[in-house]
Length: 116
Picture 1 (tube, rainbow, N blue to C red):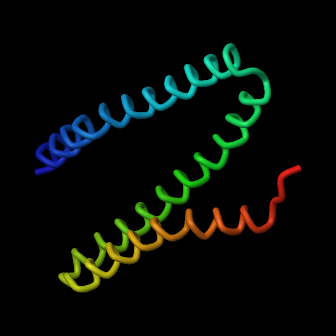
Picture 2 (cartoon, rainbow, N blue to C red):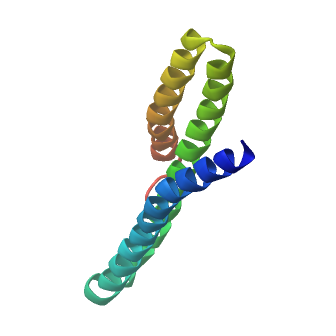
Picture 3 (cartoon, rainbow, N blue to C red):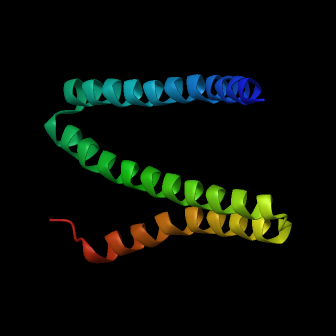
């Protein structure tokens, strides 16, 4: 039984790990190429703006990952307990939070930070 679980876990990891690695690698390469092009073609002001905004992009991605990982953990526990209503609620809350948090943070940034 243990060998079957190890095989299943290994196959599942291979199934999801390789696309994840390629997506992260692709995102990194796009950011690298954009930085080179902005630095060469648009100048240092555009390069500075891109580097400042990339921090916010990673912040929003981090928040989305935290929300989805937390919701999937809670949904897994509820699914194991057989509570299908709670699973749907966790999914709905995760979607709403992932959708609303970027708008909330954007509104705060627009209200608090004034251009020079």
